[in-house]
Length: 318
Length: 284
Image 1: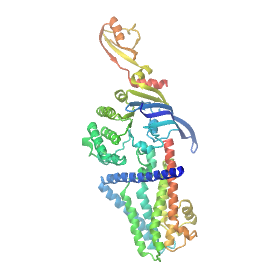
Image 2: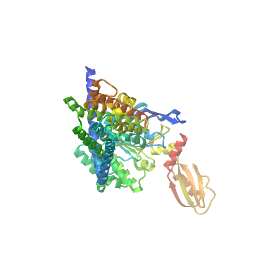
Image 3: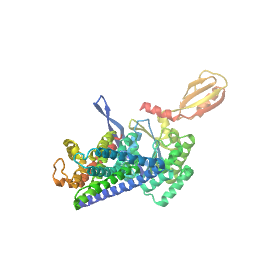
Image 4: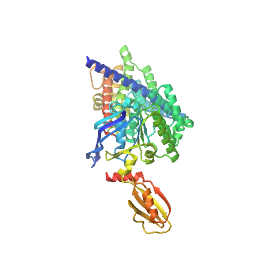
């Protein structure tokens, strides 16, 4: 297997100095990343999630060569990021959602020109890549507009294109949809799906918007307190988080809370409408059948578990 | 043999690192110049303002001389020589590296990280940050003043003293440049170190505009042996002007500016490496 990202027992310990008095300072150690190991094969798109301060950004910073790990082994495209930062830079693309790398007062095109020269992208390659990005990200009319006049969504699209012009093998996206409206989010996701499929680019994505993960990533890793608490598919995440689906039934008239449905329990009653929770790993059919058998059913709907709650529950356990 | 080869390779890597740095510096500078040109009127006004501010400095000295004949035993052309040389040296360093005082801010707001993800030396990228052509104002003004003083100076020029003038300008620029780099290195540790750095750079050039004889001897000693500002212009200039230095150092010291500049630059480079390494191991 061709693993593009490899981490083995990676740790990052910070010495934090805190002011304890006028001049006195207390030192204490913070283990931001506490022994993380995973592999990402070429062409995979992985979601990397966790609460603020869990160690997400620290991991990304180690993977891009910004930070040097305190312990463990780390390889990206076969390169040790902390030792060969510059060489690695040519092979990765980085988008920090809240920090643009575009030139504020210059037309979008000029920022791309700088990328071309700084990364020494061959002319033909550059033109082809730019054309593709312009087409997929709808940048055609924006190329000659100064970046300061772009909307947040347009700028983010511009930033993503800037990170791809030098044909990176690995793309890190840190909150790529933060602050975007629904339409822009959809466009960004569609584009990411396309480049991932088309170029077999490996993508590591951190986000707070779990729809990003649901729509883009087959695999998700959850980090909390510097440790990997989950690494697997989205379905497994539901099982692990003991998440529940909800069956909403409308009965003909008001009834006392429904009883006698195996594996389900009523969580809410509002007039003729009742909410029954059951494990997300179970099928809805037997629950529906059991209710329909004994109550006059008018209408029903099933609600999928909210992944945010699933993860919140995992954090609470961790 | 293998050791020699490793040495050669390390040297070649170092050279290509410098070349990459210069190239990246040029690329980023070009972007900033174009950015400035997006606001042409503001560029013109800033340039004029810059020039006027530095010109006023000298008018102040000229006024002083309209009431006295000499300052610390130095005539007006002699003071203009000191003023011109330090202004050109400092102006060059300020033009090329002056924006290194933004390192602290970049560390604080996290934009330093973006620079670390690019395939170019970080020092070159931050040095080119916010490059401003208007800073040419100081160099031009210093150059004009220097030209005026050279025409008026009453000294016996020899080949050695003639050569000493361009050498001291370049060495001085390198010394100031080293101070900028060293200051930037400290901003990784303390984000407000830029103020201390300004005391030595901007403060230093103000000091060097006046003859050393008007200052206390301890101060002169300090800027000779601790922060070697005296090598920017005082020591070589005293040789050009045919005067003794107040510390009574041996004569050959007047010619050591290039050496001092080299040492300063090497030390500053090391400090920068230590600073950057510290940043990469601790973050902000």
